[in-house]
Every structure is written in structure tokens, then in C-alpha cells.
Image (cartoon, rainbow, N blue to C red; front, side, top):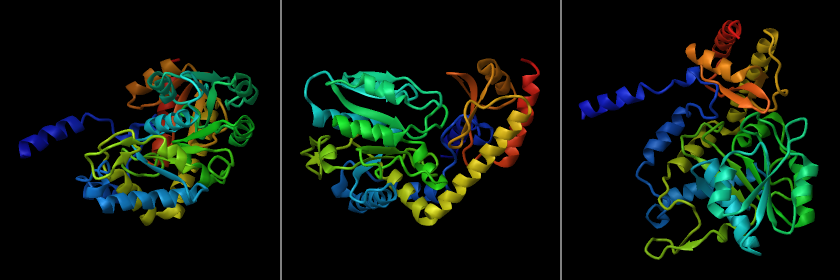
Length: 368
């Protein structure tokens, strides 16, 4: 056993420590999430009759989050993360709509690449609306793209590249007027925005039909732990298939076998830290984001937008700069609309780490 564990340690040691990573929207899970995860390693929510306690825990998590996001009657389940949640939301919208074999959805150009997968998997057209000057979905372009075959609109609450938030209220108005499903991808922003005073993206907005959030990002749960929630039971029911040989006769999830570790780790963090504790984590990330922005501005780089969440991007020759920073041991992203380096200030990015990064950035800029 020791030999096997030593070999595993060897491979694990090759992974990049989060202390040098400013490109990821994931982070070190909270210690209590890790303990909860380990406790539930043997569980399978795909066969809930064998694991009634774990299934009850999942329902408890859904109830807590439903209330938090403005709909105490919301239904859903713990998914593997934003990609699965987005697939299931659009699949449910399509299943309820089902007017023809075609159909299209409208997403902003800033939407996560999971929507390209959705188009391929479901055989639907994914129409991409232009962005306005603030890099939000251009509302007039969304309206222009809607036709009789449109069954869903998607808004993003915390875009992957810039952390920007679409105007969900206005998208809701369009959706209600047209009788169209509105899905909000808040995989990143769901556990950020409520803690900085922004609550106009979730079920409090009348037209929002479904919501995706990822507790394994700013919620400090273990990977994988996403959540998909629907306002109405009919959407969840539309996903059901018969499972006669299991302890439940029907299953509405995308994956069959599902670990209960996500439900356990989410619940553990919510009970231990509570929403007040998570707010402190978010506010500290926002403080460091603001500090990093000011420090980088002082050495001559301009932010693409004022940070809305704990993501900040700086205009520069990003792809060259990313290479130079990698030589210094830093992992940042490069985006191309506009060309900029992207920094995500997750809980593992302390003030000292941020200042150390700025020092390396200043050094590398002299080579461009």
C-alpha cells in the first residue's frame, strides 16, 4: 500500500499549487467540506432508495438554496457543475416546448462554451447575441434574434471571461413578453453576487425559469458540486426516464450514478460558515480584487471594465504576457475580445500573493 501511495504522491506533486494560479474559478475546498466529502464516498444518489439519508440531505440543500435564491418551492438536484446544469436547463426547456424538431436558443457571445456542446448534443441552433459596450448581452440584438422557433434565452450572472452580469431583468421582460424560457447561468456569480448587494439575477426576477450555480467555486464545496434549480416542477419532470431496476422508478438526472459527496460538502459549508461566513470570504476577495486593479493600473495597464465580481482583466499583449508570466511560475488566462490578461481572485489568492504577482507582472512588462 505504501508503494502505491508514494506513486500517487509523485503524480499529485506535479499539479500546480493554487497559490500560483490566478486563472481558475475553482479553489481549495473548505476543510469541513473535505471531511464531509470523505464521509459520503460510498454513496450513490442515482439509487436513492439505498441511500435515503443522503437523498434527504440533497433535498435539504435544495431547500436552503431555493430560499436563498428567491424561490422556496424550487426543485432540482446536485449536478457535476455548470456544464451539466446548463445542459439540463436547456434540455428541459426544449422538452416542454417541443413544437418541432428544430428550435433555437439565444445566448450572449460571452456565454460559457458549454452552450456550444448543448447545440451539438441536442441538435439545436445556438444563436449568439452581440455584446454592448459594457460586455453585457445586447438587448436589442437578443430581440432581433428571437423568432417562432426560439424556446429559450440565456443570461449570464458572472461571465467566465470578465465576471460581468447581464441585465437579467430586461431579459426577463423579453422572455415574458415572448412566452420563452429564461435560464440564468450563475455558475460563478451565484455565490458572489448576493453577498455584494446584487440580487436581481435569480428567482426574484419573475421571468427566470431556471438557475445554475456552482458551490464548488466560491461556495468552497468539493469538486464536483453544482446545482440546477427550476421554478416549476414540470420542467424537472420533463427530464425523467424510467429506471425499473433501481429503487426509484424514474430518474431526472443526466448522469446515472451520482456521488452524494457534493450534497454533503455543500451542506457542511452552509451549516459551518453559513451565508454570513461566505459573505466574509467574498468581501475579502473583492477587497483584494480592488487592490490588484489599483496596483496594476499604477504600472500602466488599463482594466477592460471595472470589476463587477472578483474577476479583473487588463488590456495588453496578453498571449505574449501570459507566456512570460508562466516562466515566472504564474498561471493567468489570456482573452481576445478585447485582448487582455484575466485574473480571478479566488479565496486562495491572499493579499501577499496578489502583491507578489504584481511584482512579477511589472518585471515581465519590461520585455514586451
